[in-house]
Amino acid sequence: MPAPFTLRYTADFIDATGRPKYADIGLSVLATAPHIRPEPFVEHRAEITPDQLTGANGVVVLTPKVTALSVSQADDLIAVGRFGVGYDSVDVKACTAADVAVCITTGAVDRPVAEATVGWMIALTHHMRTKDRLVRTGGWDLRSGFMGSELRDRTLGLIGLGGIARNVLSLLANWGMKPPLVFDPFVDDATAAKAGARKVALDELLRESDFVSIHCPLTEQTRGLIGAPQLALMRPTAYLLNTARGGIVDEAALYDALKAGRLAGAALDCFAQEPVLTPPRLAELDNVLFAPHCIAWTNELFRDIGRTAFQGMVDWSQGRKPRGVVNPEVFARPSFLAKWRRICGPGVEIL
Image (cartoon, rainbow, N blue to C red; front, side):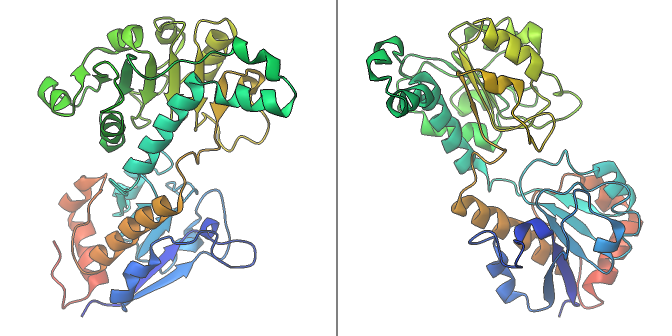
């Protein structure tokens, strides 16, 4: 029988009255693991502090940052589970040094983000925001000035070919679009072809695509990946979509390109600095769609992410390696393995 396992989750899952904000965050998977004690944080903080992790064996994190300070006293903590697939808010190196594994919910976000991407493509090309405003403001007779275009015969360029991008390709397979392009240094030509896309260099993708959709993580290699020189390669009739991470796109350069008419439009779910509490300069423009890093938030998304995140904690507590570990080097650390054995208890074999 596994030893008791204290599992905390951040306070941004809970509203001011102490009730859950969301219909289902996957806690039901713990029903078969009575040795796990789930506890929400008492207080929401932008950065997790050491006292919030005292006595915790695992933590599931929605929005707070996990820093070196966060895990500086994490003697009993075995894993941080990000509620999502991005982990730029987690100091992974510090976690590894503290013998803490970091997990993401691989696969759980793929379908809803893909649906949101396709929805934004249609909304942009059909001028949905503008046409809605025409009715609201009595501008009916102006409609002829906002002719749209279909996805048919257009080219989609994907930056990154992970699960989300593959779902986008699947959803668009029968829309009559031209063969899609993909830029991803981590996949080969055969892998791209199997997914139904042609692998190309970034410059070629930018020149040839009617839609450029970003689906890569924010890393030192991708920070500022799309700046003024890259935007200058895009067609003036093309659209840029970013549902990945802020910081990949230079927002000032994007503003300049859109303002000058060198780009037809854009859709942004994420920003270099979040939260965005005052309207950004890009909000001056009518050909930009925004969401506050939640365009894909659905009840199904939170349920599936939660089930994956909390099942990962069940796995840790029972000595099993879960999916989505982003710092697998921890498994080569004797101190990590000793901590894991201690947390699981003497009757549980790890790995």
